[in-house]
Amino acid sequence: MANTDTHEGGCLCGNVRYSITGPLEFSAHCHCRSCQMASGAGFATWAGIKTSSFDVTKGAIKICETSPGVERGFCGNCGTSLTYANESGWPGIISALAVTLDDPTFVEPSGHVFTSNQQPWIKLDDGLPTSPEF
Ligand SMILES: [Zn+2]
Ligand SMILES: [Zn+2]
Image 1: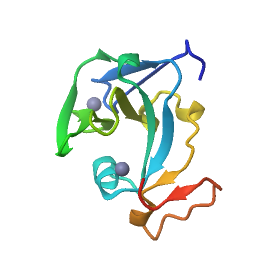
Image 2: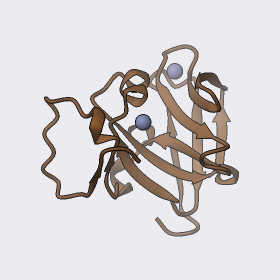
Image 3: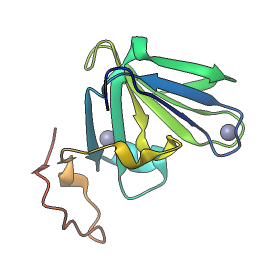
């Protein structure tokens, strides 16, 4: 992702749209229980970007503080999980769920974290590094 590239994304119903501009700070698959619950999936694939490079372009993201300081964002209409922010842990960074990008294929996750919570029916064979916690 080049510095000037803009990628758009949004929720399933289309009420919320967002854009990200510039290089991703990181991308990783998270297997923690909170991400499993919030995404409704076996694990969540995040694309982290500077908060200043993230814009909501349509509608509004609803925020739920799912643990102290952790703000997870979702569409209040269709419930699609969209974002994660934790100002104390990741200052100035917001993460979007990669699959909510219109074209998620450019995201290159660098590894799997919180594999201590990995479900036994998730079989990893992508050769990426794993970490039991973070
Ligand atoms: Zn929606
Ligand atoms: Zn997680």
